[in-house]
Length: 430
Image (cartoon, rainbow, N blue to C red; front, side, top):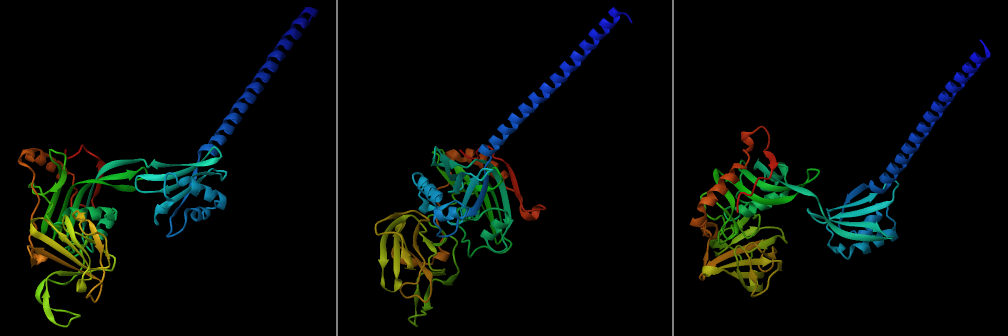
C-alpha cells in the first residue's frame, strides 16, 4: 500500500471511530436524559401520593365520649384533638354528635393528618382539615344517586324484621306503616304469611350503600287475605297524598292507633270490667295498650289540646279536641310533651307511656268521645279524607298505572326476594 493509500485508510478509520464515539455519547446522553426524566416523574408521583392520597380509618361513635377524646383513640395527640374540636364549632355543634354514627380520620402515606370526617346524616358530613397552619371546617354533601327500587317480602315475625330481611333499613318499614297506618295497626294486625310490595326512590352512595329513601311511589300490603294498595299523587295544586287505585284517600280523620307501631291490647272497651286496683266491676270506656315506659304516644288526629296535666286516677292526662265533636284522651303518661291550648297535628308525639295514677304497670289508656259519649275505638269506622278531584281523575289514572307497574313480584312469584333496581324514571305524579 502506498503512502496515499495509508493516508486514506487512517482517515477512514478515524472517521469511523469518531462516528462510533459520537453514537456512544449520544446513546449515553439519551439514556441519562431519559433516566433524569423518569427520576423527576417518580419524584413528582411520590409527591402527589404524599399530598393527595389520604388513607382513612373509621370507627363508630360510642355513647357519651367527647369528640376530642374520640380522636385521641385514633392516635391524634391531645393538643391537636382539642384544636380540631375548636375548629368544628363554628359550623357544627359537637354536642349534637350521635352514638352509632361514623367518624373517620384520614392520614397521608407518611402518617400526616389530612382530614377528620364525621357523618352527620345520610346527606352530609363534617370535614375538618389543615389549612394555613390551622384547621378549617365545613359541612359537605355526600355524593349520591337516586334509583327506583322494587322491594317485596313476606311477614314471618314483624314488618320491621321482614323489611330488614329484604335488605332494606327500618326507615322503610316506618314509611310503609305511616302510609297504611289509617287502616292497620302494625303491631296487632300483621299475620305470618302477610306480604308487602313497594316501589320507592332510594338514595344510594357510590359504594352502593343506602343513604335514605325518597318518595314511595306505590305500596301494597296484604293482611290476612285482604289487600291494601296506595299510590302517590300530586293534585292540580301540587299537594301530595296517597290514594287507593280507585282514587279514594288513604288518609282518615284518625289514625288506627295512638302508638306508631301499636302494642298488645290488655283491656278492651267494656261496660263491665273488673278493676285490678279498686277490686270492683265498673265500666272501662277505653282501650289499654301495654307498652314500656317511655314509648312515644301520638295524637290520632289534628286538633287542640284542651287539657294537659295531672288528673286523679288518670295520672298524667292529655285531652285533645278534634273537629266534628270528637275528643281523645291519653292517660297514665310518664311525661307530657304538649301544653294547654296547643294545636297538634295528626301523628304528633304528645307524651310518653307511663304508669301514673291508678295503674299496675306501664300502659296507655286511650279513649275517644263523640259529643260527650265514649265510643269503642276498635269498632269505630274511620271517615276518609277527600278523594281525587274529578278534574284530576284522568291524570291520576295515568300516574297510578305507571307507579303500580314499578312494583316487583311477590317472593313466591320469583326465585329470590325481589329487589329490582333501575334508574329512576320520570316522576309518576305531578
